[in-house]
Image (tube, rainbow, N blue to C red):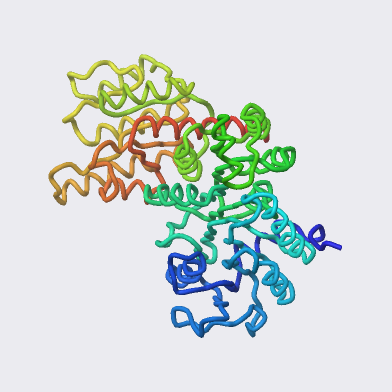
Length: 475
C-alpha cells in the first residue's frame, strides 16, 4: 500500500526545499557532469546543511570523503540528489527508501521523454518512491535552488536572495531566465526545474509556495498542465494571498509538438489554458521574460486602488510611456485646473501646461521631479505613478550627493506615505546598475526598469493583480 496519500504534499516539499542534509548520488569532480555540479555548487555557494558525496569508485570529491552507497552514510539523509545513469536508478531508489530519505531531486534523464521503454522505467522508479511516501523532483530536472538553506544545485554564482519563486518545466531555458532576472537585480526565494513531473507537478509546487512565507510572487514557465481542475482550484486559492504570473510554451502547433520530446508533455489547447488562467486569476504573459518584470513590482510595491496612472519625466519618455500604458488599458486622467496651476508653479516658466503626463523639461531644478511626484501622489484620482529615476549627473560633488539623497527620499517615501505604487524608468547608463540613484531606489524597494514599456507593463501587473484580489477577497 502506497504511503503517499498519508503525507501532505506541503510537508513532503519542505524536505526538498528546506533539507537539513543532502546526499549527492553520483557526485564527481567533473563539472561537465550533473553529479559534479550538484556536489560542487552547494559547497561553493554556502549550503547551510550537511552535504554527503556518494560514489563507489572514488575515495573523495573536492576533498570531501565519499561513501559507496547512501546506506553507508552514518547520519540521517533528508534529501537525495540522483545523478547516475537511468538503468542504475531503481537500485539507488531502493537504497534511499531503506535509508529513510524524505525527498529526491532526480537530475538523471532517459525516462519518459525517450519513449515507451523510458516511460516504463520512470513508472518503476516512481512506484518505488511513492510506495515509501517519497516525492521526486523530475526526472530530467536540471536542479533547484532554495534561499532558505542556500541549497544551489545549478547556478555558478549564488543567486540574489529575494521573494520571487520560479517553477520552470524547462531546465535549460529556466536556468537562462533565472540568470537573466538575477542579473537585472531581481531576488529569488526558490527555483525548481520540474522536468518530466512524474511525481510532483505545478499544482503541487503552487500548493507549497502558497504557504511559503519566503515567497511573495510566483513565476511559472509551463509547457503542459497535469490535473487541470486541480491547477485551477489550487491557483484560485493561492492568488488570494500572492500573485501567480505565467508564460506558457507550446502556444502554437509547432511549439506544442516540440514539448513532447522535451519533457514528455502534451501542451494541450492554448485557448483552454487561457480560460483556466482567467478562471484561476493567474496573470498570463506572452513574452518569456515579462513575468519577471511583473513579479519584481508585485513583490516591492503596494497594490493600487484602480487603473489610473500619472507619468512624470522627460518629453520623449513621457510620450513612449503614455503609449505603452494606453496599449495595456491603463487610464491617464487629465489633471483638474487647480492641479495644473500648482504644477506650473513648480515647472520652469517655458514649460507647456501639463495635462498628464508631466514633462519636467531638461535642465531644470533636480528637485522639480520629486516635488511633482509628491504633489500628484496626493490626488484621489491617481492610483499609481511612473517616473524617471534620479540621476547623479555629470558632476559628482558633495552638494550633488546631498541633493540626490533628498530627491530620492521624497520619491521613495510615496508608497508608504500615500499607499500608491511608484515605478521608475532609468533610461540610459546613468539610470543603470551602479548608479548611486539606482542603488538608493533599490534599497528603498522601488523597482527601476530600463524601458518605458517595461515600466508600463510592471504598473499594469500591479493593477491587474489588484483587481484579481478585489474580485476574490472583496478587499
